[in-house]
Amino acid sequence: MSSDDKRSKLTPQALAGKKTGAHQVPKLKPVEDRKLLRAIIDAVSEYDLASSPEWDQLDQLSTHTEFESIDANPDGIFEGPDNSFEAVGDVYVTLNYGDRRDSPAVSDAFPVQVAGTFDRQTGKVVVESVTIDTSSFYN
Image 1 (tube, rainbow, N blue to C red):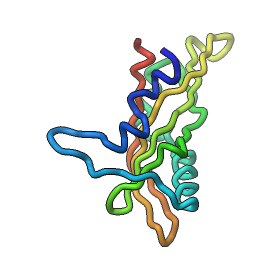
Image 2: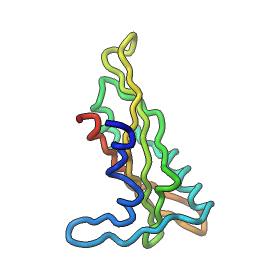
Image 3: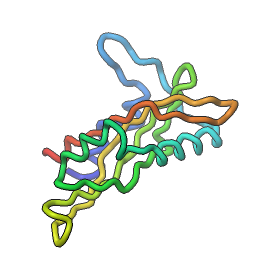
Image 4: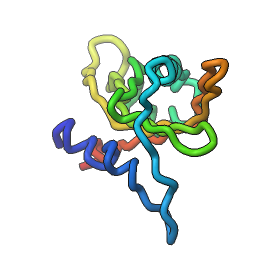
């Protein structure tokens, strides 16, 4: 599956009109404030994924999974109600198989959806949840 196919489930268009259960999630709008956009991108890239509960999902993919980075797509960051945001992006990892010496290693990327809140006055951004789509690994 190509990297574009991996992202098809977590597109900006899907986020902007996403439905859950029987009700529509409030409509999200693209973040236009450049300072806020930069603050969200920075908060996502600084998120300590390797120490989070979401890490287990990635760690199960190999004998030794190494975290490389997590990035938000600037065109996939949306502002919601009550100073909330949702963003799509990618997490980059190295999957190592066997012991650490002379073992096969594969770099891979998986789509992520990030949600959180921000304070427009202080510029503080808090990442509250990260959802990782590893389904491409199993297909």
